[in-house]
Length: 430
View 1: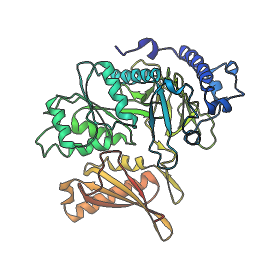
View 2: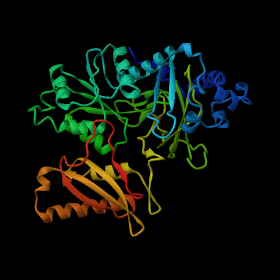
View 3: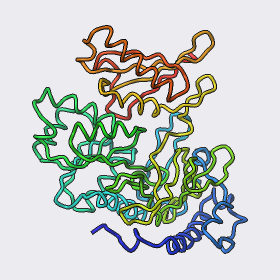
View 4: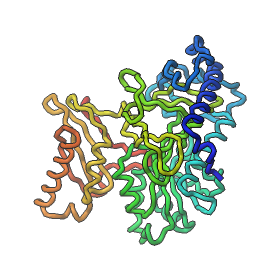
């Protein structure tokens, strides 16, 4: 059973006491690494008298991890390391995270706790449509599902018709899938004569690993007739299992027995109070092989101050607004791609795919939004299409504060991906 009531419903005071103990242990353990041994040499854990004293410790960044590649953050002998995960490393050294057997056990338990929280049980059948390998998403859910005793199908992404065959033949009830691929997969059902609501047994989907709006989540739920839950994680922490929605789908519970979270002003580094939006900073509290202290995620969100109706006391974060490095600056105006998605996906005539192109015209930035629209809409009258185009343009202008150019294209004509969706093409310097 993975309803860990004693941990998940700890009082605020008891949880802070627990976190303080774990923070001191983390500081002690982290000093065994080359990086923190130097960075924290003047820090004595006995001077940490409250969990809020963590604000006196320095931040850790992705660049710090790259600069100390490959073993600068490792705190245990290499003989005790059983796995590593890594980023793609397309811009220099990759960020590498090491796991001991203890770390993997903790991670597995967290993912099992997440899945159990939304109703997954041993009687379910789980089809994992996420990538495996150095990417943490697929393998994290795989081990969590097996820990629960769930029949697990490690199919990975791609081969859409085969995916649907497995979904139908094995009466799959639970899937883990990229939001963009869930929408693409749906386009194959009609060709195969399968109605996902009538012919499948799906009831739960775990979605994440790429930015997506609430509108996309609702669309997936409507198309498949299931409940889709947001998952938050990052490989620097462990992968999936850092925060997860409960059945109320009202923010993501952070497992605060494993992670201490702060929200900071991304420009000043100042810690912000609960309820204010800023950059999420996370400290591991139980990491053995590679603890991280005050890691700047660049993810923008806020802590939800109200208690959740589910009874869990671990704080919740709001849906990730975007990453600070994903922010687009258009003629001095800051926008996030998810703002565009949120706006256009409210329109019933819009299909499942879109891209954003940024160009320079007369030395000014120009945003072009290419949107697939439903087949019936595309073959409507010119007047109807122009009205719809004007409507979406005005709504985007109201949301973004800029005047984009909206162009409709036929369904299936934009680039598709079985991995993370590429939405933004910045052509301003080309």
